[in-house]
Image 1 (cartoon, protein in one colour):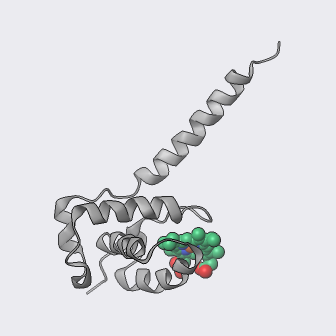
Image 2 (cartoon, rainbow, N blue to C red):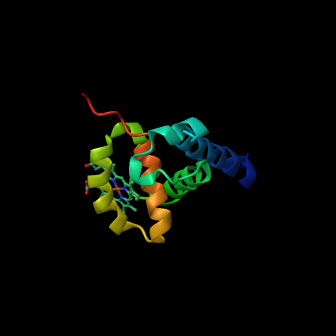
Image 3 (cartoon, helix red, strand yellow):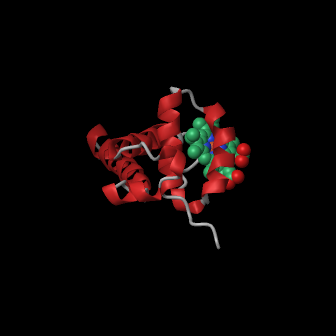
Length: 112
Ligand code: HEC
């Protein structure tokens, strides 16, 4: 018996969605308290800016590889990596800064 298109497509679409959701679910969602972790140069940033940064990151940085979680790199590493990766995306400078601010707010703490 032939399966309908819907019964083949639906499970596939469901799993694709599940994978997409679970990937970005690993990424921390900014809260007011996280503003304290922002490096001094981003001290004027608001919660909305951090949320925009997260959205911009999810929308632009997962096309070629998985979305790394911010905690996988330190602040210093993100600065260095971002200098290369920013050339691979095409967004406005202000959005870029928010993206980097998001990664750095949740970066792994460097060992003292
Ligand atoms: C056009 C494809 C592409 C896009 C878009 C892209 N990357 Fe990458 N990324 C790569 C490739 C290729 C590598 C592995 C080679 C390398 O390290 O340069 C990589 C490596 C990385 C690594 C691991 C490198 C390390 O040294 O630890 C991180 C972290 C990373 N990308 C973050 C980002 C972020 C953040 C963005 C969005 C601003 C982004 N990528 C967008 C292609 C891309």
